[in-house]
Length: 133
Image 1 (cartoon, helix red, strand yellow):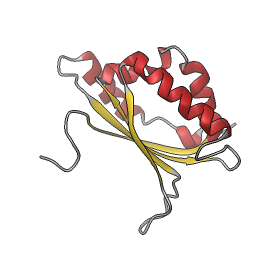
Image 2: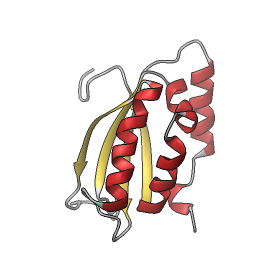
Image 3: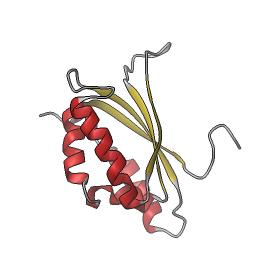
C-alpha cells in the first residue's frame, strides 16, 4: 500500500523535535485536512467511525483533545479536495510527538492508514484563539 498520501515533512518534524526538546515548548494546535477513501464510512460509519472514536479515546493519554471537526462540502478556490477539517490540540509539541507511544495508538494509526486517502497537517499556535492577536 502506498503511503505517499501520508508522507512526513522531515524538516518540519525536526522543528517540532527541537521545540519539544528545548526550553520553550508549549501548546500546539494541529489542523488536519483529510480526504477519506471511498467506502470507509465517512462521516460516521465503518473504518472511519472506528478511527475517529479511537482517536478521541487515545488523545487524552498524551493530554490532547479534538477541539472540533467539520465536514467540507467543496472549495471555491484550489484543487485540494477534502472531506474533513479536524482541529486537535496538544498541551505541548512533546505531547504531539508522544502519540505513537500512547495506548491504543498502534490500532488507530493502522485504521488511519486504511481510511485516509490524503492528509495535510498544519502546525498552529495552541495558546491563542483563532483570529486574535
